Image (cartoon, rainbow, N blue to C red; front, side, top):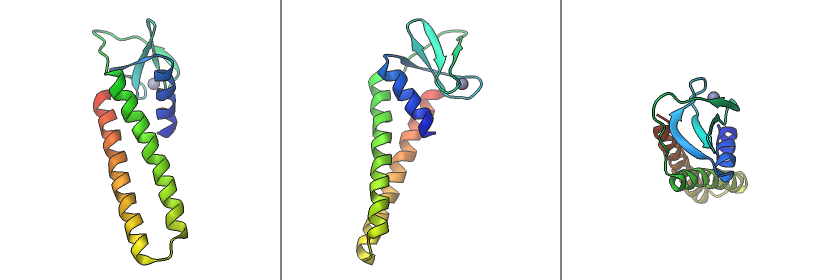
Length: 116
Ligand SMILES: [Zn+2]
């Protein structure tokens, strides 16, 4: 999953546009570079039958980078949990993890909505 997101972020960085259509083989959103359409997961060219539509590039970039940020914060929280011995502080950290997981799940939900 995070590998896929990395590939998608790479394509956006190269100036590709994310389409609302998905790859028929793997279900990942298709990307358009110049006049070619690719699946970032299969690494193959795709052809869209019918009308292609784009998802706002800024929205996509924000959600993708937010997702990455939340994952890195989660790693930081995990390190803190490993070292923390006071129950009060542990509870606070665990609550923060739950909130982060919630936000990550929501950002993935949004991504799926764009892909459908
Ligand atoms: Zn694919």
